[in-house]
Amino acid sequence: MSVLSDSSLSDSSTSPSATEIDLRLPDTRAIDEAWHRIRPHIHETPVLRSTTFDRLAGAELFFKCECFQRVGAFKIRGAVNTVFSLDEAEASRGVVTHSSGNHGQAVALAARLRGIPATIVMPENATAVKIAAVEGYGAEVIRCEPTLAARESTAQACREERGLTLVHPYDEPRVVAGQASVARELLEAVPDLDAIVVPVGGGGLLAGTALQARRHHAPVRVIGAEPSGADDAARSFRSGVHEPMDDPRTLADGLRTRLGGLAFSILSDHVDTIITVSDEAIIAAMRALWERMKLVVEPSAAVPLAAILESDVDLSASRIGVVLTGGNVDLDRLPWTRTH
Image (cartoon, rainbow, N blue to C red; front, side, top):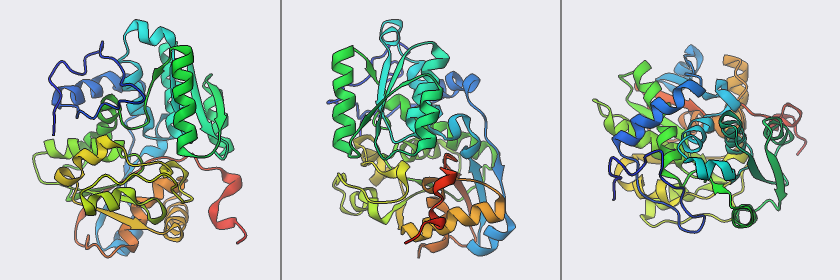
């Protein structure tokens, strides 16, 4: 596994090609530089507790509430680090990405903060609240068919036709370095954690969490959690072969993507296990967070709690960090109010 040199992620480094993804891992310096670069532009989100969930889990849970983050999700961290790392020539041409919502919002806001244009490719089935938020940050939205292939090809066409810089949602070292700051804040607030559980889609947060946990003075288990209908990370972890999924099926729209090569490259060495959960368990956890902690989180953010409460992995008697990744839920389409 390759590690970037101290100069590999300098402010003048270029973005990877849309067809040649940069699979190098950000080193210690890159992760520290990302933290200092993004701090003026993000919130240091709180860590909350719940005696009810402690009792249900048989463990002490520490909820890192990225649902209170700018744009309502952790994605702003990686987006800001990447956008503010671009040199002036790259930045002046503008940026493009594809996203079902949270990453798109993050890139749109990061671009606005830097004063450059942004184009966001979004699937036709993206939630209205996320589309409105992207447009509210001043970005251009281009709609496409709700498939990963359509998202990627449309973003690539925009990049080539307009000379835009691609800000990949997860397979980008600068994005991963920015996402590592979630675990940094959590471990500074609760340094004696036994484990951290994070949701897995493309794997940028998982990768950043694992890299940050590796630097911690005490061993911390890193556990991924993903929907059973989008289980390419779990399958890849078990087989040792990258098995990206082209047609994920889950109500957790933020996880309807494929595992990236950058995340896969660290699974065997730096992730302890990956748990899969049903959509029904995700809905139950999402509702329980609302009822018990008064936290409105999107389905993707409820996946780690669902994994803790529903899986057969023994996490009892542990101190567990739980990353609630976002709160951009469409209140008109709450999953437990649907007619089946």
